Length: 236
Image (cartoon, rainbow, N blue to C red; front, side, top):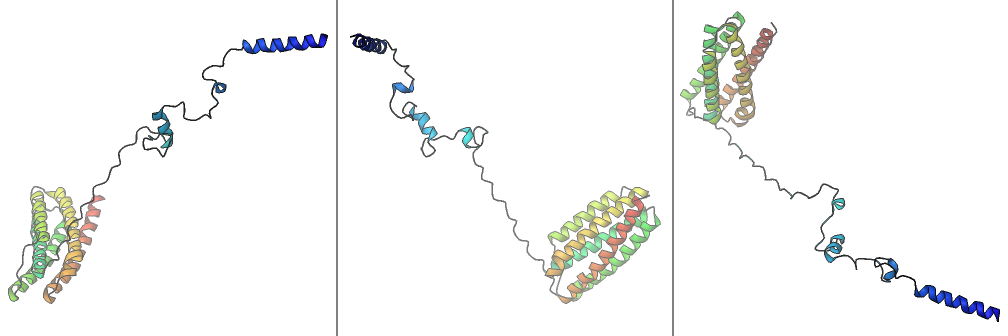
């Protein structure tokens, strides 16, 4: 009898406890038996988490940080300069004459304005060598059917020589010596490059080719002498 009363009381207490247990919170996992996923996430958020969704927007962590990605910039293709046409023999003769004449005119100015006797001697040598080469180019033009024809390279040499002479004409003494030697080094270097890159590869006639080949060592010698004297004067 006593055991029966105790069992009845236990059942009663359990029923009362269950009847008064508060409902679980709305966000409690026990309130929803469905598997956790995107059922409680707005569609726009869910799609942003799906990397295969058409509406997916990569988060900062997905692209390595840095916020908004800049638009891809497609570089403009670089312009390729048109190949320069090879000079013909008439144009090569024009370049040779322009180089010779520029050196003759500057040497004449140096003999009048230079202070250092070594600069005047160098100018004498340059004037003599280029005068001989100029006479040779004149003989070719007179005896053959080739006549000097203007070219871009010849025009550039003439323009460079004109600018140098205008600058040198206003100078005297040591200032002239330095400027003259600087101009000689630059001019002879430019002529050497024109001969090697444009004249020798393109020349056809034997007499014009022989002239260009005679100019090349003369210009090289003047370049070496002018640079050596320039360095000597600069060290004083």
